[in-house]
Every structure is written in structure tokens, then in C-alpha cells.
Image 1 (cartoon, rainbow, N blue to C red):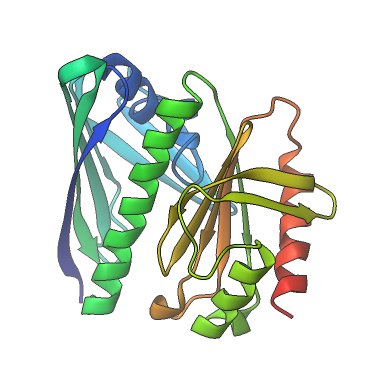
Image 2 (tube, rainbow, N blue to C red):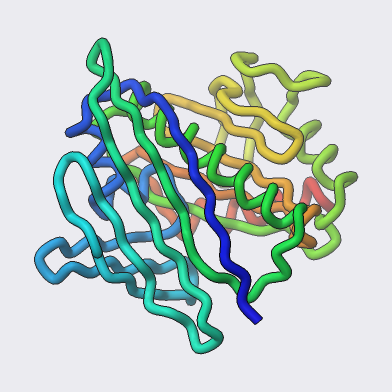
Length: 249
């Protein structure tokens, strides 16, 4: 049985509608703040998405640059699908207002905790979009993902990650962060996002994102956006995987 859902968000972004459009309606732009790898083919009206071994396709249903962009994924055999819409309006001082809508059907058990977790995830990703536009405008990132052991699907495991990042108790946005990852080197930046379920660290060349997912019955994960042109995604993924395994042992 599928369950219908809607998630609607509105955010003020520190960029013109054209810059926002570039970030939300091009493959490299989306990759720089959202998860996975995207290919946007406006002429064919198709979007292709890949993350690890998972792939999917979606149909572009609305293409009105730089104001409105919408697409709908091909339904799965169980009838579930996702549809996304981005509405961009110019605002004062060269900023924009983005209205975002995520609609669809899911086969997941759509309880209150799942819905809240889903909504919190979009808050984090849209904040990351704002960080991209404000601090890394025009730059492109490569996405790196890694996951902790199954045993990290617990609130206690998140405490270990917070300590390994050297964050204050409680963490405070704007605090300096410095720690070292074997195979990556020192990470030096600021805490740009913090909730009981997420930590975001911004450096001159990366947006690091840490996800606590125990409420969804899932292990801790990372999803980092690396803007350095020489970043080796495969090597970085292995290094962060090893870091998670060590911290969460």
C-alpha cells in the first residue's frame, strides 16, 4: 500500500533568480548541494539520477527558466514515485525566494517520525543550497557518501560523532572546527548547521554533512560536497568510510 505525501518549503536565498536556477535546474548545480549525481537534459525533458548502484529517471514536466522547474520520476512497480517543483521569485537586494514542493507516493510506513525526518532532511539540504550560493557561488562539487555500521542506528552513536568532530556541548553555529581524517588530512572550517540530527561544516573547498538517522532505523551517514578540482571521490569515500568505522567502533 502506498501513502501520499507533500513537503513544502520556502526559503530566502542570497542570489539572483538566474543563479538559483543554475543551482536547482542543472546537473552540476544540483550535485553541489543535493545528494547523488544528476544529468539534466532539457531538450529531451529528462533527468537521470545515480547514487551508488541505484539509478532512476524522471520526466521534466515544467521548464520555464529562470522561474519554474518541475520533474516527476518514473513510478516504481509498487506505484511509488517522487515529484519535485522549484518556484523562483526575485526579492529585494539581489536575493530570491524559492518555494519548493516535494510530492509523491511512498511504500514506506509513513508515520509521524518518518514524515518529520523527511522534512528535516529538506531543511538541511535547502540550507546547504544557501551556503553554496553565498560562499561558493559558481563553483561545482563532487559528491561523496559513506555510511556507518548498522550498530550506529542509535542516538548514542551520534554522540560519538559529535565528539570526534570536536564540537561544543551543545554545538553552536559559527564555532570553528578542526579535526583530521586519515587519507584526507586536516579539516578546518566552521559549523554552519547544527540540529540534533545534522551537523554541517563549511570549509573553503567543501560542504561536509553528517546525518543522524536513528529515528528512521538507519545508521549514521555522511554526504559531502567537495569543490576542490583535484578531489578524488573514490579515495575520499574510502577515507571517510574508515573514519566512520573508527569513530563508531
